Image (tube, rainbow, N blue to C red):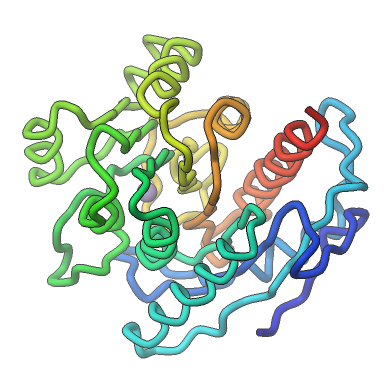
Length: 299
Ligand SMILES: [Mn+2]
C-alpha cells in the first residue's frame, strides 16, 4: 500500500485501534464519459492539510483516530484488481471499525459492497445511494462492471433486496432503469425533484422507516448528487441537483439514524474540476462524516 496520509490535526490510529479507516481506490477505468476520478484520493489527502480539525459546529475532532491504509495501486486487469479491492475491504470489515473508501469511479462500489454483503451474510444489509444516477443498469457499454451498474450488482447478493436499497437525488435515467424501478415498487427511489418538493425531513423519515430494522447499512456517496454549481469536477455532471448543505444534512442523518457500517465517496474528478471546488466540497462532506462519527462515539 502506498499513498500520502494527511488529515492533519486528527489522531493517527493503528490498524487495531481507530475510529475510522480510510482506503483509497483510485480506479477510473469504468467511466462512460470524463476520466480523472483516479486522482481523487491523492488530491483529497493533499487538500486535507488545510482543513481544520473542528467540525462546522465547533465539534473537536482531534481525538478521532484515523487509520489511513493508503491507496490500492491501480492495475489494468479488472478481475485481479477488483478481487484485491474486495479482499482488502473484507479485512477492514473484519477489523471492526468503520471504513471510508475514497474512489475512484462508482464501479468501485461493486467489489466494496460485495465484501460488505459477504461479511454480514446471512443478515440482510441495506444501501443508501446518494447520486444523480440510479446505477441500476444490468450492462452498460457491454460491461457488467460499469459505473452505471453498481446497484444492480449489489442486488445480486442474496442478503439484499430492493426494499433495502434507498436512492436519493436521482435525476437522469436510462430506459432500463426506469423499467427496473417500475417493476420493483419496493425500491426506495427519491428523485431530486421529489426531494425538493417533499423536503429533507419527509425523505429522511422515509429512509429511516425503510431501513431502520437492519443491522448494517452501506452509504455510497456519488459527488454528482450535487448540482454542478457546487461540484463541477465530476465525470457525468447533471443539472438540477442538491446543494452541499443538503448533502451534509443527508450524510449526518444517515450516519446518526441508521447503522452505517461502510461509506464510500466516489466520482470526484480533479482533472476536470475548477479551482478544486469539487474536491473541497467532498472534503467538507468527509470532515462532517468525521464529526457525525465522533458524535456517535460521545453518546
Ligand atoms: Mn452518478
